[in-house]
Length: 122
Image: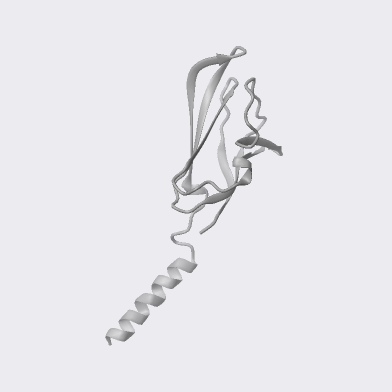
């Protein structure tokens, strides 16, 4: 009887894992934007922090960035408009688990940045 219970428990655990119950995705990406207090060419500067709240690395993160503009240069390996109102984060490279990516831009009003696609690598 004990063997059957262990087998059923193991089968249930494997089923949950393969169904993605503990997998990472868009819900594990947090984006925070806060005004820095600095102005660049007459526009307020915004500091953006992108957080991977998952333990696993995430790659190919794309954010919505409708009509993104800035008067302050942004390193394109960190944040880059791709067209079609989408922007790449970290040049598509993996963001380690629990790690952050930071960048700043200057425009008014601030842009609503939200994750639209990502690939978890665990």
